[in-house]
Length: 90
Image (cartoon, rainbow, N blue to C red):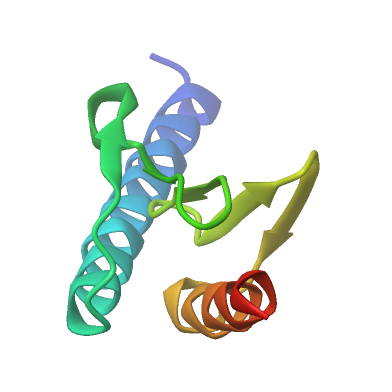
């Protein structure tokens, strides 16, 4: 194997490990705040449907709502989601 291929494989493995760590941290943060959605796509997406529909991706810390993607991790998502819940109730 060439050196470039080996470097690429090392970088790819580091990226996989980082995403796995983010996934674990973000899922733990959701549980800590009592948010439990429907897990889809072999655990790669958490879908919340009430009072608003939003998809959260724990391995990247991004979420999608109404065709717009936002990011910042689980803590920022929880703050955003709680604000949207308050809006939906008023």
